[in-house]
Structure formats: structure tokens, C-alpha cells
Image (cartoon, rainbow, N blue to C red; front, top):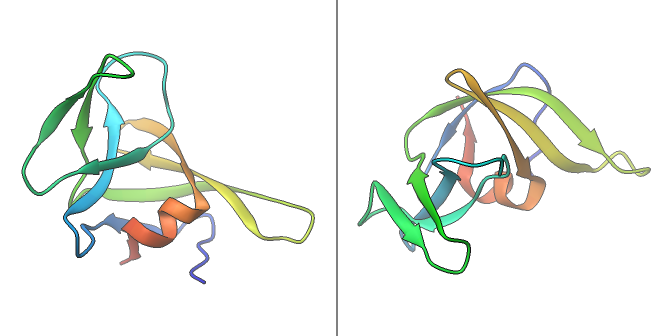
Length: 99
């Protein structure tokens, strides 16, 4: 299981099925989610009425790691550009690669 620490520089990758991480273009949602990245730079997510931007190839800096009582990571606070986002640990394992 991949674990990252504060200060790690990561790159957002695309998995073998063409999915990657994306963020909401507008609104207060600061959690990253999965999206089909190979075909779209951005796409509309009807259930949430949000336009989401794919983050394929972007660099992210780990600002903070939130862990449970067993010291396992739950969420990562990431800085991508000038914005800060939260990423669940399970998504970080799938779509983030240490540079």
C-alpha cells in the first residue's frame, strides 16, 4: 500500500482503464473524485450538476495527511497550483505517483 507524507511531490496519472482524478470547476466541493480522463479535459456530471476538470499530468504537493488510530492514512490535503483539495487515501493509491 502506497503511503505519502507531507512534503511529497506527486503526479496525477491515468489508470489502465482511462480514469483519473478530477475536481469541480466551481462550487465548494474540495474533494477530488474519479472521472473518465482520456476522452475529456472537462465533463458535466449530471447527478451533481457540476462541471469537472480532469487533473491528468498535474503536480500535487502533500500538505497534510489525516490518519486513523492505527496510523493509516484516510485523506490527503493536496495543493495543486494555488488551490487546496482533499483526496481519499484509496483514490491517492490509484491515481497519484511520487515524483
